[in-house]
Image (tube, rainbow, N blue to C red; front, side, top):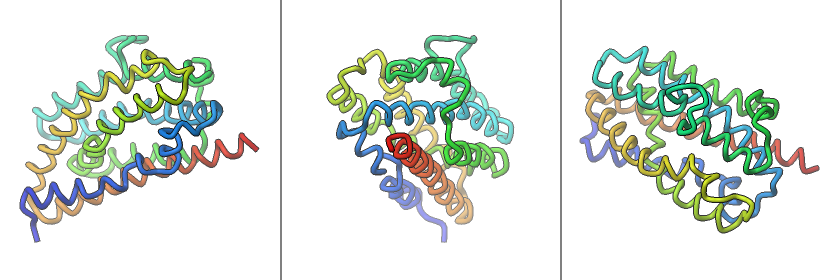
Length: 232
């Protein structure tokens, strides 16, 4: 049975407990309990996710038949990749700044030597999903944006309070994304609600968001295991 718009949105928002903010590794991060090595493992592995986001978004653009959405989605690719190589305002460069703050060199992050198989597998599965599933499902998978703005605010405050070698400028990826993801989350939700006109499409959107939550938590599972191995 097709849901009303309010029922559909409530079901999507009801997946917030599956978001990676509730994962034990993130909870330890916010509590200030991670070692420098654990933070380096996290930053180096999440780099792979950040690098693949524009490829995921490009897949959505290539599959989407709606010009209005393609034009709007292009901004996401440009943000992450930058307008030119080395664009200091790009998501890539801001993440590299954080990696350097936790003790990694740019070279070892960019060559992906620290990316563990579990993270690579999860992220590649996400990009494959965007390539192979209907564009609306790929858009719906990005509705984790609904949950991320508040978590980013917490992360900035908690990391500054707990890790004295990290400074506000090092967290520019988060501080500059808080407002943006809030707007993106609303626009993404509007698209999913507007174009999910059948019960089957609504079911698929919920499943897509659930899948994305699984991807993110699988990443943290792999990062946590890798950090444990390095500590022993």
